[in-house]
Length: 396
Image 1: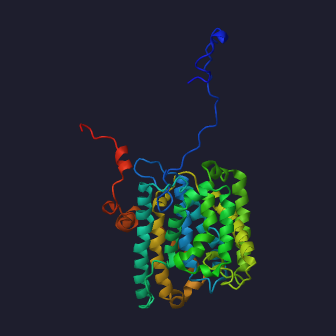
Image 2: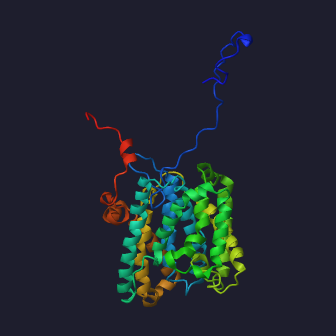
Image 3: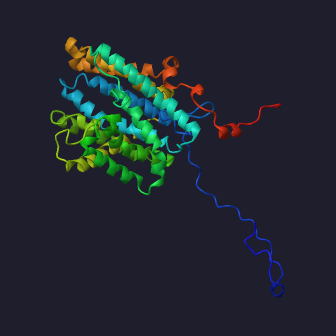
């Protein structure tokens, strides 16, 4: 519709203006690649249903991150007797979960409380949490010879805290898209959580709140932000930075408790003064962010032999916990002293990587899909809006 008025007074009529020329739009920058998931409701942060093109970079990043998780749990068996193992443990724990959470936040950017996405959140996150919490409880009773250990949905055990956190974070996604300064606000919340011992263990809220800034940063990132880490100078700088981090971790190994990197306790519970909460929160956040950038700088962007395994990282993450805890409950380091020697540490590292790799493969995913990705169509009412969006059947 024209912006000119539709009628004029008779004494102001003039000859009509010549028709306006059609102006071609100015060329803009080429479109950036879109994330492969679209909905961001998949539990492992990637997604991509049938017909969707997955992004090799994010699958590679998730696979490498979950391998580091498994290696860290292997080193947990050795850190009491090996300073080198503890240095590697501290370095990896400073960034492996922040990297995983940041990628999960990136793929949650478009989450909305629509019925279809809420169903996916329930079946892909909430249901696996309940099933694995039950499985881990039974496993602990048997493997740790602890028949009195009680099942509780409010007290996540071991690895299941991440599912609780992912559920809470995604439900709050619309809030972080609404507020003006989401990242500073999330840092304030994390700092307040760090000085609030009364939060307790319910739903592991300490971790949920203290890791929150990494999820919010992921929500705020765009595809071009990830392209920045591909620059040559970033990759070159990442090498000495990681080297310095390992050196600092080696120095700190006898002096620092790993619990500071778990983010599961307040500073008072770790024996520090309350005023250190914001300082330590911001300091650890800065260190972790730098190491995440260094990690992402060396993640391959092309398809590799392990790219396809990135779709099954949540399988590897949750399933390898039974083996890691089983080795700990079984007293392997004491029963096999050679594991504490340099060759034994290498063996533990390689075995951890191979085990979690095997658990991410398609055969394992097919076996455990009933627990990780159940359809559960019977549990949900039909969505009228979704039904209206479906095209009519041919001949109907």
